[in-house]
Length: 193
Image (tube, rainbow, N blue to C red):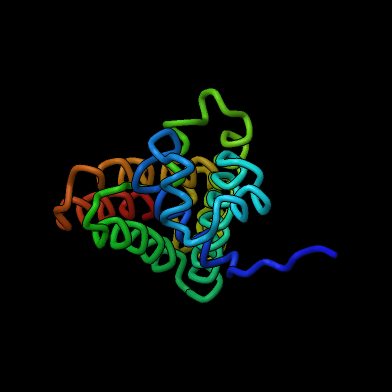
């Protein structure tokens, strides 16, 4: 008879995200995971197999959580420019609230592991595609309504915003000045007119 899990997997994955985000993949030991997740080493191995599998599950959990927030903003905001502003402000404010200056978990994984880990690279690419589609949908809606300029291709504008977001995410590791990010957001939004 199979044993049932005696822990909440969402709670464990949330804790794993926090730990990997703070220490990075290579800086996190199995003992760190056992100590932080509140489950036994055997439960950890039985459920996830190894640290790498747990890391991939944590990345997926993070992606699913942040992706649903983005699509909700795009779907529930009538103005395309307001939707894009809200997306940028949400990203910046989440980063600014972080007193540990961890930056973005997905970008950190991209820098640390994606160059030599195909599974992480694929996960990062899926996350970027998800982000790209949220922004592309908002820009297309704005171009169709006349709110966003048609001088630029919607996909090109989208990729500009993706690069801007990565700049914000990396800058948040060393900068805590809200005005710095407000200037970036204001300037980025100006390309939509």
